[in-house]
Length: 364
Length: 173
Image 1: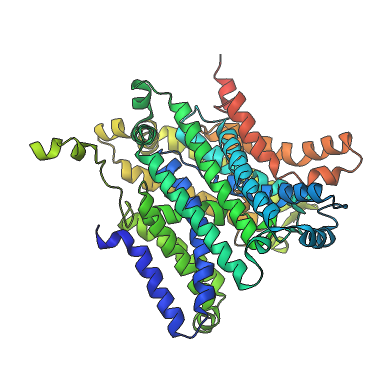
Image 2: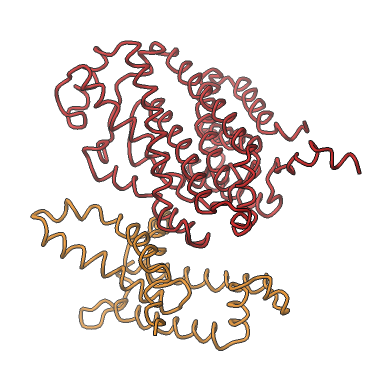
C-alpha cells in the first residue's frame, strides 16, 4: 500500500497532536471527529457508489440524508409515545413529552427503537432515492443531474414549513435514546462515536463488497458508457435505480445516526451545501471511484472543518473576519485546486484487478 | 438599492428597463449563436464534442467563451436584481431551483425558451399560486409558504410530460 492511500489518516493524527499540544481538549476532539468522519464517510461512500462508480450525477444527496433524520425525528418518538401511552402532541408539547419519555424509556426498548430507526430510515431512503430520480432516469445525464439537484431540497422545505412533522422552524428535541443505552454524560459521547464508527466501518465493508461484485462492475461500465451496458444485456435504467436505492438507503442511515447523535432534529440545518456539495468535495478530493480514497477525503475535510472550529478565536484575530467564511473560501479553493491540479483525486481509482487474477498480465 | 432606481410616473424604472434589456440580450444572443461562426461552432461543440473537434473547432475555446458569456449575463442580471431585492451571499443558491425550473420548463436548447419558461414560472409562482390558494382555502398563507416547492414540482412534471420544454410544442408541426 502506498503512503498516500492513508494520507487523510496521517493529516488527522497530525491535527490531533496539534490539538493536544496547544492544550485543547483532545478527548472531545477525537470523539467529535469520529462521529463527523463516520457520518460524512457514509454519505460520501453512498455518493461515490452513485457518482464515482455508477456515473450518476446525484446533486440531491441532501434529500435522503434529511429523510433519515426525519424518520428519527418525526416517527420514532411517536412510536415510543404509543408504546408507553404518553399523552400529548409530540411537536407542540415537545418538552413535556420528552421528559415523560425519558422517565419511561428503558435500555432494551431504546435499543430496539434505535435499531428500528436505522432499518426504517434505510427503507425510506431507498424508496426516496428511487422516487426522486423517476422523472428523469431515462433521460440524458444532465437532465438527471438537474432533476436531482432541484428535488434535493424537497424535504428541507416540507420539514421547515409543515410543523407537525419535525417542528418547522423551531425543530424538535428527541427522547434520550442514546443516554438510555450508553449512560449519560461522557459515556453518551463515547457510545455515540462507537455506534456511528461501527456503522460506518460496516457500511464501508458493504460498499466495498458491492463495488467489487458483478453489479459494481456493471456500474463501472455504465459510468464509462451507458449504451454499452445495454449492449451487454443489462438495463441501464434499472442499474441507475438500484444504485440510487442503495445510495439513498446508506445516506438515510447517516442522517438517522446524525439525528440520534445530536439529539434533536431541526429541518433548517439540512442544507444543500452541507449534505450535497461537501460530500461531493470530499469524494473529488479523495478520489472518485475509490472507496478508500473517498474516506481519506472525508478525513481531510473533517479535520480542516474542526480545526477551524476549535481555533476560531485565534483565527478571527489574524483574519479580521468571521472564520465561518474562511471555511467556505477554503473549501471552494480546495475544490478548484483539486479539479485543476489533480482531477483524479489524492488516492485515484486503481485499474480493475481482474486481469491480474487471471494471470493475463504475468503470462505475457 | 431600490432608491437608486429611476421612476416613470410611479412605475419603477426596472419594470420598464428590465424587459427591454432582456429583449436586447435575447436578440443579441440569438444573433451570436445562430448568425456568427463562433456561435455555430459552440452549438456544434455542445451537440457532439468529438465530431466538432474532428471538424477543426477549438472546443475548449468555445466552452471558455460560453462560460464568459454566461458569467457576464448572470453577473449583469445580479446587478439588476439589487434594484429589486436585497441581496445576501446565498441569494444565488436560493434561486438555483427557480432558474433550473425556468430553463427546463421553457426548453434547454432555445434562447427564447428560457424567456418563455421564466415568465411562465414567474406567473405560476406568484399570481397563479396566490389566486389558487385563496380560491381553494380560507387561509392562503398557510398554503403559500410551500411556494418554494413549486419549481421543484415544475421540474419533475415538465420532464415527465414535456421533457424538451414549452418551445418544443412549436416544433411539432
